[in-house]
Image (cartoon, each protein chain N blue to C red):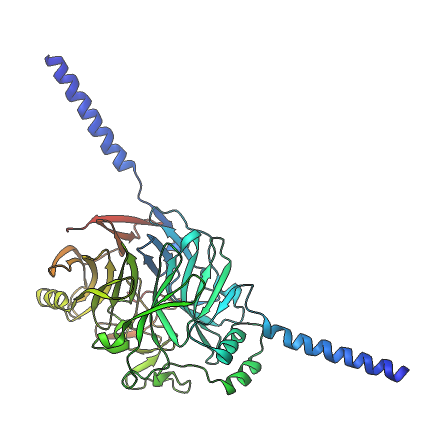
Length: 336
Length: 135
């Protein structure tokens, strides 16, 4: 009987040790440095990380996409090969489409004030399939559904902000680029059509699809919106109060912020807090429950070697530059 | 007979030249499907032509003389000003941008259009590399 107990204990110990070693041995998914050390956007609807957002020149690296397990998604995309006279461009957002396609919202600059605001669709093999000229709309956020319809968040380039009548900021395009639906009037926002503009240090506009709801972050308005697929607002939440609370607690002079959306109920703020010229900058990651407005600081530190990617299920994914040759994708559990 | 032959040769050459000159106007980059869902008629046509990189700039300028292009309402984006207008710069995407650093993917990047970083109250020149981090 006693020997049975000892055998049982030994087996349990071996199992626990084996599991621990297994966990330690598991390496985090990683992105090679030649792709991963550049600005990125996370398509949370399809759990894809796109590298190559922002300003690009002919000498810049091509766009590359990775799944959150570290596996590269499709071929690298070089927009410059399709537009040889392109001087430079700004990639505002990217989304994964069906059949391995990639949709890109970009401003193509041909020099001499020749700009084109476009949505480009590329195949899995990196071939340009579609060019949609969205003007007079300037699209700043995109997401796709399983059928290949594209939802675009943007504002018009031909309207005077303070004079013109309200207009829709959300457009649904068919897979071939026809306008199916327009919604989310600019009149719904204090800042009108500029509500969805990037607020410099306070995040980029976000549009994503989760469980048949559209999740939107409007930076100038500092507001998170949950909408139906038709664009009707189901919930809206201002992050201003959360920021004020953090600012008061940490005596923050100014913020830089990255917002990550998870589902209807949660978001995560990745903050860089400037607390004065003679003090080190604080990096804090705060989870917010938008149902009741409560927030919880997940991580707070002075130096940081990682960037928040986004939310997947109940975890926060981060891109950690803790290796010489690659960046690792690591995760933190969300508090609620 | 000789004169007729020469005239015919000239005519053929001119037609071929005209054909070559016109041909690019009808080609969209690669064989991609093109659509301009918010535009119609001549503007859609011009947009299609403009995206064709083989069309010479002067042809685009002539076409835009008839169909003015769409520009942002940012006064700093009129192409003549390098200094800020009402405290804003013209960003590469043709939108007004305030002083500060680009915040892209959670990373603070140097503003290539102002060549400055501002972190807190400090303003300093961008690092050498494009899209470099300000921190």
